[in-house]
Image 1 (cartoon, rainbow, N blue to C red):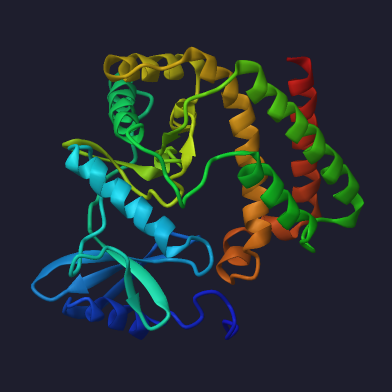
Image 2: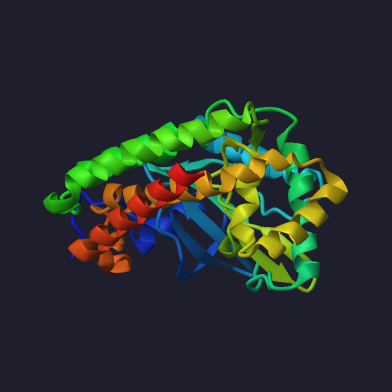
Length: 318
């Protein structure tokens, strides 16, 4: 049984359909929950039309202004003919409200996982990312913030240290290694000097790229923030050769400062720290213990701390 105070506890199937119908859409009662943890996303059947996708935003994560910035960025990219799924405008608005829910509607767009072992696919992705960053560099986010140490190290570490999931036996070691990594990562960023900050996709891993016969398209700009261009590149390249090929495509359409490659390891570690903090912070959402049962096991946290210790040693050798 879902607790009455749990996130999304009131988002019943009837509430989802009523929300979508409040936007003037005549649903046919069909509802399919799609894979999403931070938000709740549903495919909703529509009478005499193709289904729509409804995305319900987690309360307290983003302000309305930050969500509207994401939506405006998606439309700016779409208007530049980039393959991005932008939210529908309903009576001039993309962020919709019904009762206490905030949601957006999207046209359904299927696709398959990208084949990033292919050099042609990597070059294609590189060209698209260069174009995305060309648009992203036109102006700055105001409400969405930056991919920085405060967001990806300090905040998640506080969540972990406040969580009963972290075994007491490793709490001091965790705090010590986070402090060491934070200092090492700060030094790494400082060593390469100022890096241009762009509006990014922010979470550009293969799961957020879908491929059709027409090519790739980007989904889920929910983590869009300001940050360095390399943040949108490194998760798509699993080997140094793949990164080289991705950059070949990128540099056909945009400049890439190779000094940013030194940020890949710090960014990877920041993502690793953030992932654990995200699970700890969201543990009161019933979906999280079901999806991430390993986080309830002390051995997972012991391994996480060991991985961070080894990473700190590697950074110390650079």
